[in-house]
Length: 113
Image (cartoon, rainbow, N blue to C red; front, side, top):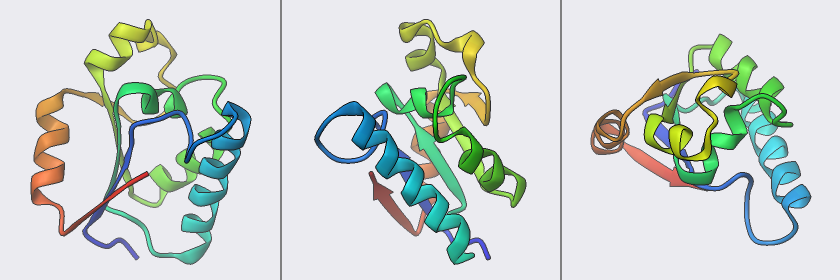
């Protein structure tokens, strides 16, 4: 069941610590979200967070499954261009900061991870 919340990823993982641990925690969080059956309406990615939705990310499997159940995944185009990742997007749609702002403003709840 989708709710009206938005998840916001601004880093290539969760928390502080080694990159591998941060990514492992992000995968765990997304996997548990899938298993819970309570899905956010959207997941937004900007700054380093866009890396989670690009080729080679350990989070791709979970993100693909979330997209299949109707969760919208929106990636910041400016961030992708800055990091040279526009051609490596593996899941979701590329949007602008306007799309991200609109999602944040219309959301009932924003969870920044």
